Image 1 (cartoon, helix red, strand yellow):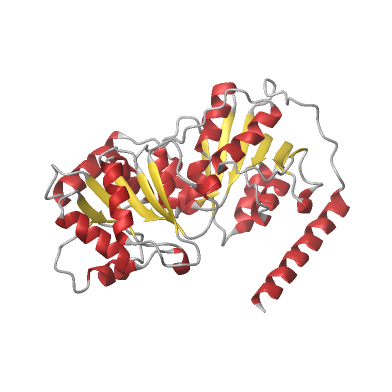
Image 2 (cartoon, helix red, strand yellow):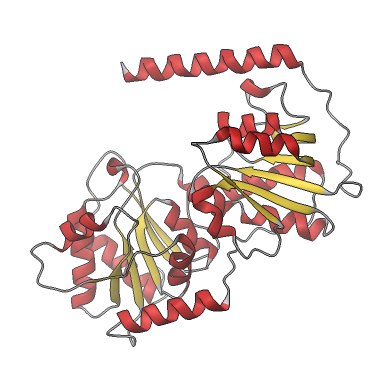
Length: 355
């Protein structure tokens, strides 16, 4: 029944977008490469989840390196604004509140950008609507069936196992942006550094050991490894003095950490709730992050911290870690991954040895 409802929803959406297209008509594609020399401003749309925003960071550096005169604005979900704060390649971060869409629609109608990039390789109704309402000279996006009429420049979809950060950069390549910078980057200021150094100094009892962070939570429960297994890994690594282990968690996950610690005789610490930006800086100062496949995993890639991640969903080629040492554990439709296997691989990462 749920599958039928989902299919009907897709059909209704397709009809809706086709109807808009019939009213507005198809656009004539401009000649490529686009002339950025005469442009002044660029808008990048990335109004989705944390990991998507982190994986978009090479886009801003690539545009700025290629055309330093361009003013770059980025629209992201308001909960992800802080992760881009301090980025020297971005002049403006526009917060998007999904509960008040008309506020941002009015703002985009008021502004006039020269080029807008919609980074979503999978069709997004929200991102497409934001591109539609923006008064923009050229719209650049992937060639989804729903929006054949919307974009001036449409990049063909393919089934190549390409990383999502490279999918984003493919749009830039297509329109003539040539100085492509692939690494993910986050930027921190002195106050943020001092605050996290203080928190770690107050929290750590064994600063001589490598700092290992464990994030057991996940957005969807069925995408997460068993909590009991996380507890076993944390306790054994602590008991063996392989590392000083701390749990990290998002707001609302406090009870989850309480459940893991119930009945244990070995104390495994927990860091206080931190903002996303602060959490990224803690990960940067750590020896390793162990987590499920979540947006937090991409923070490790952006700060070059080794990561061990469990994939129960998603394409590893598209969504796995990049630009850092890592090990991936795939546990699809089963519960066969043992804590011992995880501990063995974490030990190798901590000691920088190959399998």
